[in-house]
Image 1 (spheres, rainbow over the protein chains, first blue to last red):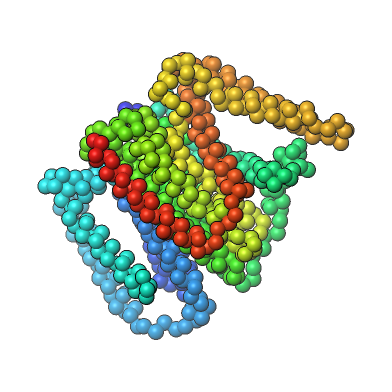
Image 2 (cartoon, rainbow over the protein chains, first blue to last red):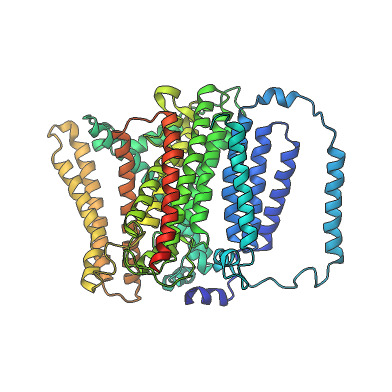
Length: 188
Length: 439
């Protein structure tokens, strides 16, 4: 890290990540999340979901986890949602939006959401110093990606304790990809 | 106000790192204006160059040699009726061009025009650029769907399939370049410091090339070059330009995804396309062609060489002014061309004035100290070399369009998945292996 940047940080310049940003991003995430489940038009829902995912990426940035934010944008907003839209576009929206909702699962969903909300509220109400750190963590923003790399692939025993779990997860993804190819292609 | 403006001059980091929001805003405005002007210039150059490729004259009527044509076009597009088809999805139709434009312009926050000439230096720079530029496809897909018409929908499906496929090869070769940032060795096959970490920051990537005394296009000789070529092909496909412009193949799909768009909204798509072209070229320049570095910054590092290379920006403008002067002198003598001749001469004089200012700055800031003139001179040099390299790519885009016929869609997909993807995977694995062997 270069000295000028340190001096800029030490001279008491206010960080850009203010609570205001958090409230805006959180409100955006909640509002667009509501739009996802209330819109009847599937494309509108998908667009709202993209806004949700992007605002969550913004929240990751505020938590000084830029790598996770970047991956969130690439994988979810840029990759998965494009494929979503790709499929939804081929569905006849007009007919499907007029059809009545045939499953009756919404009370269960509401109950689950309320239970989760209650858990969060009780955690905040009962929370003490053990639950929440009383101060922000020192920002490893400048080397966030490098830290993740060290965690995953660093020396075994010291830092790279997640190599095995990571490789297992990637193997699972590979199996899923092969499965998808085999299911769609009759003759390979 | 003035104090806080001047306070940034001594700093050697980007305004984003220094937390200087005022300068960040100024940089954003400069970049936005610069890119918009560059798009207009590119528009003119493309029509002119394409015409000359085909032995035509191209735009000649509006202004001398059609120089005012982009301005006339912009005015026309702004005044044209903005039609939204009755059966279209109004809101999505309205928002689609904005998505494309936002994605194209957001990436400019991390493009390093120089070590401190960027809005911000993100730890995840290249990841951010790839991610946000991949959001641009959303604008195209959504525009095609919202038009509620067949050609746009087919164009949107084609472009999304194409962009998703080429992104894979593109991402893999970018990883191979990022891998090279962790090597720390000097020269073509130099590797030292086993177990060091690399960087994703755009500025960090250029600094790694400076430290290794080599552009990554020459690192591990054939490997860097192959990776660069793969990226150069994939970026043409990624921006939907000829010969990969399946999304807007006019002989098949009228105008593809933007068939139903008109007026200002259509021009936003054009602006987004050209801005995205500049952005991907900037990635290529940053990753493989040494970013803002002038040629041979380490080999020819004597002050006299530094001075000679710092004359280049001024000399470029001298050349442009000379071309404009010759154009004015060669105007037909008929009185009908009098205004055009005067206009071109004034334009040439303006270019000459810019050249004079740049040469003066180069002379005034020739000493490598921390004076304002020296910092100005440095900054102009960095931005000049970066923009020069990007401009070469912009010309290549036009050249491709004039030279190659359009691919068929199945050929496009076959090249993407069966040729580019295996090669880029091979380059990535070989780069890692060579890096381990030579350490």
